[in-house]
Length: 215
Image 1 (tube, rainbow, N blue to C red):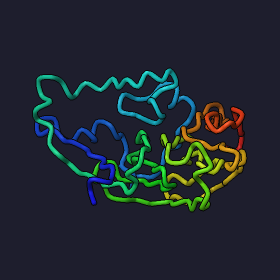
Image 2 (tube, helix red, strand yellow):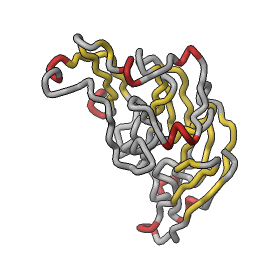
Image 3 (cartoon, rainbow, N blue to C red):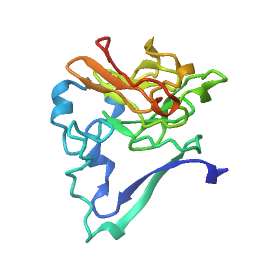
Image 4 (cartoon, helix red, strand yellow):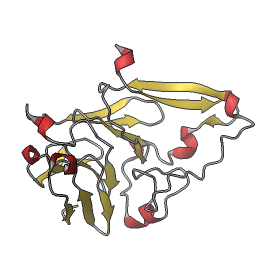
């Protein structure tokens, strides 16, 4: 039923063309341009490659194509219905013409940001007692760095996926989800290192910060 799903929508404007043409500098068919530190430090106006776009976390986009004078010209371009109708609040990450979205159930997808077509899908199978983790269904999204997509899981793992194929590159355990610990927010990546915090304080788990240089 569509009313139990999240629907991502991309709008176009008849007078200025597809908004995505300004946002996505590259076509995914052209190959992958690695997302380096400089690109995260100084994102292009159309880039949205972190949870709140930039390291200062102000979630502000400098794009100015949409104004009060032309907003009424927005038209539907495409929609994609997600499967998870729970309380996950993922921010789509956009890089090199691909849009990466994660669900609280453990599914990560990559869409062609211009057409909305599914490029790949990766699904993690959570254990039957995953509700022991405070991060269960509280997913906030993924991160991009280099040529990989990174995400923290509700069962206390950090996973790296190939950005173009969705194949698992590496998977490492960070804690024991049965103690309430789990990852709900996307990791922060900088200078070749991955930083990620832990949910679980409401479940009496001790807070911690994990740092990895496997990126």
